[in-house]
Every structure is written in C-alpha cells, then in structure tokens.
Length: 420
Image (cartoon, rainbow, N blue to C red; front, side):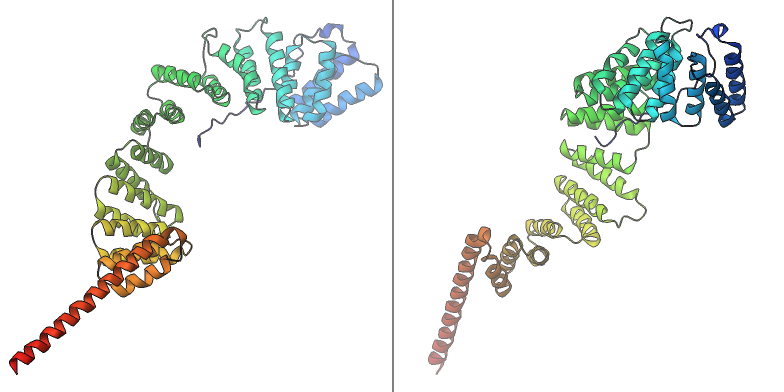
C-alpha cells in the first residue's frame, strides 16, 4: 500500500528531580552540587550546570552517588548530547536497577541514537519498574506505547505486538487512537491481514464517521482482492472527506475492475478535472483509462475524444493502435489506416501496425497503400503469414480487375464491329 502510518515519538520530559533517590544519604557537598546544578538547569544554563557537577567529581573522584550521575545525564540529554548521556544513565541503573526515571530517560536517548530495540527494552523496563508506583497508570501506559513504537521503527513488529494488544484489550481505562493505529500497523507488518481487518471493522463500528478507517478498510479489501468491497469503502470515505486526485483515480480503477464503466469514467473525468493544467505525461495515462472506460460503456465517440487528448499530451504507439481499433470497428477505414500507420512509425520494432494499416487500406480499396504496408509487415515473423495472405488477396483482386478491364475493352471493340 501507498498509505503507511507515520508515527512520531513524543520525547519524554527529562526528569530533573531526584524522586525515588534518598537524597538525605548524600554528603552535604553532593547535595549542594546537585541543588546548584538543578537551579542552573531551570535557568537553561546547561553548560554551567555541567561544569558545576564536573568540578564536584574532580574533587571527589571516588564519588558514586546516583543523584550526581542522574543529574549530569539529564544535563547532557537536555543539550541533545545523547551519546554523552547514555553511559551516565547506565551508571545510575547499575547502582539502582529499579530507578524507573533513569530507564525512561535512557530509552529516550537510545531512541535519539537510533538504537531502537535497546530503546524499546529500556521503555519496557521503565514501565515494569513504575507500574507499581503511585500514579494511576497513565504514564506507565505511555511508556509501553513508546516501547512499541521503538520496536516498530526497528522493524521488530513481533516485539511490539503483545504490548499494543494489551493497551487496546480493554484492560486500560482509556484506549488512545494512536495505540490502535500502531497495532494496525503491527498487524500489517506481520502480514496478519485478517486481524487488521477485524480491528478496522471494530473501529468503524465505534466511529463510523472517521474517514481514515474507511481508507484502511479499502486497502485491506484490495489486499484480499475484494474489489467491490474496496470500492464501496472508498465511496463511503469520499462522502466523509473530499478525495484527492490519487484517491479519485484509485476509485476509478476499482470501478473499472468490477465492471462499472460509467462510474469509472465519471471518476477519471473528476481526477483529470482537478488538475489545473493536465498536460503532464501522466495525464495521458488518465485519458487513456478514461477512453477504456468509455469503450466498456459502449461510447466509442467519447473514447476517441479521450484518446485524442492523450495523444496530444504524449503521442505513443499504443494510443494510436487503440484509436485505429475503434475506427476499424466503425468501418472508418481511411482514418483507421492513418492511425495504424502512425503506430507503425512510432513502434518500428512491431509489425502489427503495418499489418493493420495494410488491412484497413485494403478494405478502403487503397491497394497501393495496402501493398506498401503489407510489404513491410511481411518482414516481421509474427505478421509474415497474414501479410502474405493479404498480399495474395490484393494480387487476386488486381488480376480480376485486369480481366474486367480486358472484357470491357473487348466489348467496346465488338460493338464497333457491329456498328461498322
């Protein structure tokens, strides 16, 4: 599918506080250093805050206090220096593996470093260590969601699936739309089309006026080759939201596939009409599809108009071939001969244009033109047999015409004899 979901990771607010750390156990000098650094951070003076803690560590090289390392890691993170922050978060977690904010912020910097699987693992650890905390679970659920997004970006949807299924199972008080969309993408990546379809039908049942769900439903139905259902879903979506050109063309293609040429033609015309200056090469293709729709709807004159528009933009052999076939079906032999002749010039590697041009010229009694095209067609292996048969037929007609002329001349002579 051209339409994939795009997810944005909402960066965690880096925690400055030392909740969960027993600051009372810190030496007075460490407490002072952390306090002064945090005041500077509040003023966004990150360099000065960093320097204050580095001065402390230079004076106390054996210091192994969690608040010092955690605050320094946060300073690096707030400056966008994820690579510098990571080792300090890991030092914090080595000393206190249950410190959830450090897992949370480690996940954030790992995400910035594009270490997505490790970021996902860190977010899961943050969830597990915070799940028994005092909050109502909202923050913890967001952690699981971010873990899932990290796994999805890493191309590991199987790791994402259990977390998203839990979040959308009803076990969580409020199910957010982005969770459902992430689960939908997970099912698509895992090629679980039936599960994705069930999810979309559920979403439509809950919120049938959301055009996004109908869009997804249409693409799922197309994957299952249920084109009528896909066309129906796109039609409903068009009632809920104005379609763009690509969506209109997709509807038109579906209408053609399920045998509703009149609706297909209307959709193609609508798509062409949305282009203020439809003179790009791709517009030729739109007109060509429009022509096929008119033909399927038994409207050859409209089909010819559409083909002429296509040819004006991009004169190609196949367009002239189709034009010739329409003219030939209407027994407009001279025009058909000209169209096939153009096709033969544009596609010199294909003898079909010469063969059909010769046939139409023959039907229009233009024997010399027919002979010229068929003589060229006979040099192409695929057309040799038919071209030779038509040339033989021309010779037969020519002989018959000579005989008729001789009989007519003899008749005139006899009349003169009797007259004399």
